Length: 118
Image (cartoon, rainbow, N blue to C red; front, top):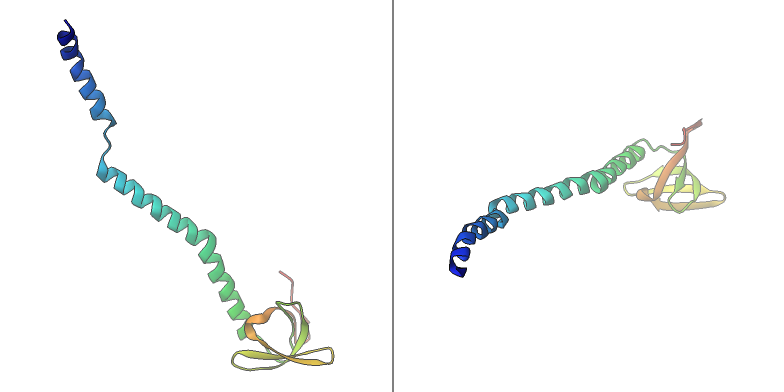
């Protein structure tokens, strides 16, 4: 009697086991797509804004001229006296400073005209 019931239930157990087995190729594809999606999200949220900011700073440095009023990243206000390859000479009050170009945060006034704050 028990063997007859077991024989009748065996196809049901086999069918259930077959449904729960996953496709290894499908799992690999899902994994690769998930990693690629995280890469795209990382690029859009982190890398692209940094590239845009660097490009804007480069444009700012190319337009920098003697007489422009600038603010450094440390908060020093000054007027550009001269520009070299990697540095900028500033006059702030009675002090002459030489700072790296990368330390210039923004130009507040361009040789007599006010720049709109962004």
